[in-house]
Length: 295
Image (cartoon, rainbow, N blue to C red; front, side, top):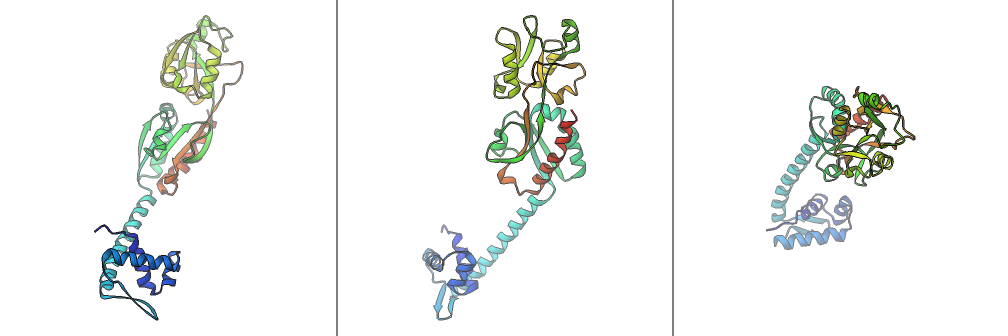
């Protein structure tokens, strides 16, 4: 038999309260809804569960048997609910975190090391990706991402601003005798991120500067751009937090400031009440702004 388990809720309410009005009040529905559900349940079971008299509703023999079993089920479900809720509210378990390759290398290690010392029961799985899809599809608990406006189904907070600099290696700067971004790039090489970054403000700035005729090496991420720039292969654009850890690269003065981007700590809205996610998210809210302001 395929039971409608929601009928059990109405059955227990009437058995415990004895009248349609009191059962309806406890459930937040009308008394006619309670009566309709009880009749449907009796039809489903093909059994008479209640006797009706002037004092209200009392259980039949069949109803008493069902009531004893239903109470057991209710107790099991309540215990399971508490167990699941307790697991979510413990400061232990796994947090799946996703962020960009550069943030995972230059920013997160010290922050996560401090966090794991503070909350020894939390385990981290860290994934590097440059898209929002992992968090939007609930493949991760927390995402640290750059964007101007996060998707509607994500909650979180802007924790800082990522600034960008045009950079070149010390050897390249010495070879070409430059201190600022050159007005003409005819004698220069550049290293640019590929079109997957085309919506990013820094990409649009750089693309406007270099035009189409410049000798350009395209790469798929900042780590590769920095590595090539260190080898003197040309001028590129990097986040300021990377430049602070790259002693062989030097920022060039630019004709106007390169457009910045915002850094967000985000979670899926369905995870807003999970205690360990709340704790880690709040820690990142507190720590990331001071870190970014120091670079």
